[in-house]
Amino acid sequence: MTFSISSAFDSGNIRVLSIDGVEADLEIETDHGSDFYQWFHFRVGNAAGRELTLRITNTAGSAYPFGWPGYRARISEDRIHWRQADTNYNDKQLTITVRPETNSLWVAYFAPYSMERHFDLVARMAAKPGVTQRELTKTLDGRPLDCLTLGTGPKQVWLYARQHPGESMAEWWMEGALEKLTDSEDETARQLLAAATFNIVPNMNPDGSFRGHLRTNAAGVNLNREWHAPTADRSPEVLAVRNAMDATGVDFAMDVHGDEAIPANFLAGFEGIPSYSEAKGALFARFRDTLAERSPDFQVQKGYEIAAPGKANMSMSTTQLAERYGAVSMTLEMPFKDHDDNPDPEFGWSPDRCKRLAHDCLDNLAAMIGDL
Image 1 (cartoon, helix red, strand yellow):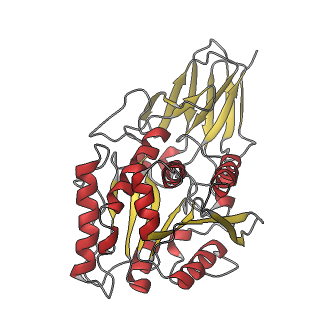
Image 2 (spheres, one colour):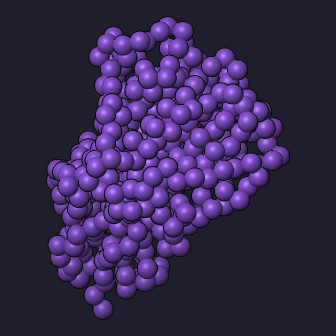
Image 3 (cartoon, rainbow, N blue to C red):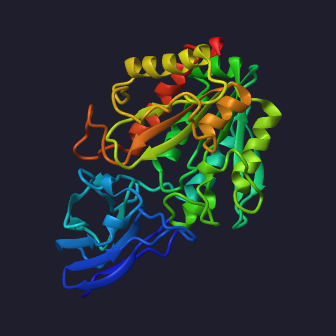
């Protein structure tokens, strides 16, 4: 029986070029209305017990081709545990070798976080004592943009994720953060909720998430280049969140992402904004450096180049929030590969590790919340 490949489901993305025996040639489809592509998610059917060779042939033209060397695809037969597959990159194509034990094997760029799981998360958290859920707007495809608010303290903390929908590790981080903050037995959570009000947007880009996009919304727009001038027809998600931030102000903000190429967790700050101050910069540096001391899954050696004075990209959320509100704002990046300083050969960087890092970030914030 010929095996099959399908991607007609929530966050699915692949195009089948050919299937011949135990081999398949595939392509990743571009985000609608843009040239971005890198996220893939598909199911292999009717192949139990056979060793398959799956070639993704258009990786050289992807958004971040330098992300493929050293990368390993994720596979699962129960959609709960996602392990690293035998993966090789050469001749400008990615080759994934698998031997499914059952007739349903799922293959993805990273462990997916479906819109159904998102809605389950929002419903579960909204039922917790002290949590308020609201829709900030409807997306271009008509999906709700959810925000969860909890805490009674005067500091305004904003946590938001998945501006780039293919960076699914960001919502796994959010799940961990919300679970910790709503744990009535967690002393750190009690301290944080007394000191601050948390405004949490677990998924900034529901449309792109469902469509299987890497980086854009339904209009093909990169939301993290819209914060200087969001509009209802291009970026209603950013417009709604920024309007909500205008209403509360922002003292601390974390924008949660994934990085294709760098095999590490790291933070990017707001150096280079017009109003940059050494005092605010010192608070960012303190958070970054103490997180490295706290977590074996965080480091400070690898990361992005720091912008020169006055040269920050003000269309991005981290810089825009620092300038607009005087916030200590930052972008957290997690790897699609593994965290090389603390690797896991079987699972790589994984959902569980995303959630543990969220706990470490909140513990770290609790140690300095009073100084913001």
